[in-house]
Length: 115
Length: 112
Image (cartoon, rainbow over all chains, first blue to last red; front, side, top):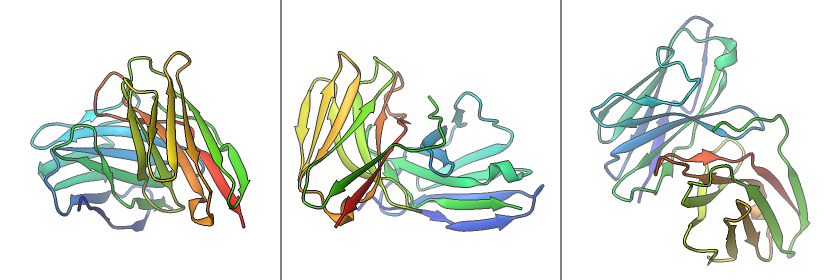
């Protein structure tokens, strides 16, 4: 149980376009979902926290207008990278938590390359 | 907070030896800590957790030690196997409860 999927697993887009990444909890209801970004050989950086039906809370330094997060249902959160630039190329990982306040289940990640 | 740095610390061990991976956390208000394993190109995988009211917790082949005085965590892996080769991260929950902040990470290589 507690499986989280992400789609797509990898994506290449041109500079200036927008890309949407989906995060789904497959077998549980996720009251809270988290989005992380990870550059090569670096740690995971928490970008934002989203609760179903409410606006996401962004970490300091993360542009909310650039990284749009929608958590419309208890099983789906989306991250849209708007007007992507090469420096947005990264590994984006989501996690979801259900009834257990502390427990997070991670998705497999999405590799974004902006050319 | 954000972890910075271009190079992950590395640790190489012989197969069958014990591994110890260390982590310094930053927020004295953190009361919950998790160790994760991340293989290349994949999401983090939960290994073991510990709450701040404990100083040691054991799992299968793994032990986590917590020293709140110096804000230090360690992960001990017994009889390390090639499949243990990965990057290991500690994460703390800071002031927020269920938002987790990851440490720098350590790349473990097991030599057969």
